[in-house]
Length: 222
Image (cartoon, rainbow, N blue to C red; front, side, top):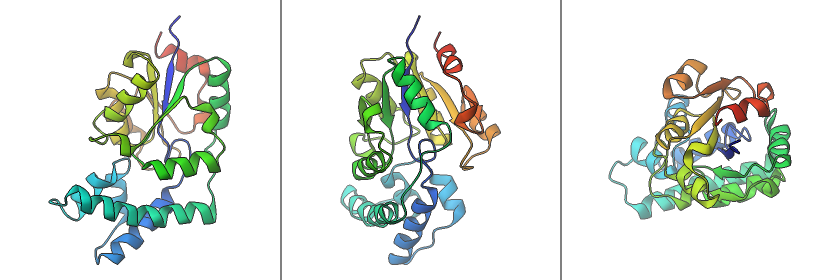
């Protein structure tokens, strides 16, 4: 029997910090005298900061400016998480524990900067479940490029076709499929409807991870 390897996206999949991110982007945009709309948020969710900044504000922005602006935005975000906290989404705790009980390796593959993930994993007390954490700082190409997930698989010593990625964003689903991985997409936070996620290539789409069983996940790589 093939043992699945689980790679988790974080924002919108493990936790719902969408409003923290939206308010942080809004504050940052105001600081540089630019707009930031709900449509901008939906169109860029799941991407790394450099891709978002170049797409929305400065196509010619160099890495130094992207780093400066990205940190400016993330400082707002991290303050919001520290001040307001965050909760794991429905079904996450059960799946983390059940995967761990079966000895299935688990990793994080996120577009977020390292500082954000360290904070979120600490606040939710989930560090112990992950054998590897790959962040936006560890890649040169953001989702929908599969680099973040391929690095996660490599850190776990896993063939990509053994990996099941948990995602909520179109860019993430496309990244998983580009990496020859299976993908479970969850619509709970509502960034993308189920038909759009299926069109992006998701193998399974659920409204909540409470619907998902370990047996169903295992069947994806058998």
